[in-house]
Length: 277
Image (cartoon, rainbow, N blue to C red; front, side, top):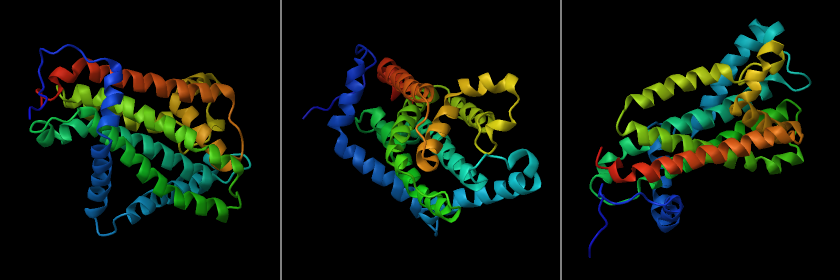
């Protein structure tokens, strides 16, 4: 039986081929997701507990610093408890940052497999992104507990919270595919992405309320798609509010654009992607 080979002389693949590959290799996709999760949790003695402890410890430190030491500046988040606001932001932004970095390095990290066996490279990127969703879902347990302790409760709008989660999956997958395609030739792209993620942590209202931002800078905050992701998630998960239409448009629009660009990048570079590893 002859196997497909990577040939740089082959024409560019249609965009739809990338999605067809995911469906065709759905069994492999499931195995890769399970592998990602098992490897992540087997490396430490606490295993999955780190998924719960890590955001709680981060939130606890930030709560002490910003809500207690700098209470006048950071403690005012309206009627919502700051600890809930903070934990929701930490969890959802970690979903983005960890997912982007992991997806961006998925191809170079799987070079030993891709150079020996024909497997569509996009399967590895999407599997890594899906594993991030599973990890994020587990980490939501502490947020639900904190909501109940803080008296916020669990509103009916939480049923709509999978929408921003799926949109974030598309955003992370698309951006991760862009980074992965570039990192095959220029590995420094991954390090640059790490720096950009750190900058975005401070440019996005993750741990500080938007009320402390001077009005002249608000337009820059609103233009940041991650702000809309955080606000939509917070509104649905614990505020019990339906976000405004412009935030929905920002979330869905940026997700589709990012995914489209990522798929386009893979369709253009697939001929040389593996041969460059």
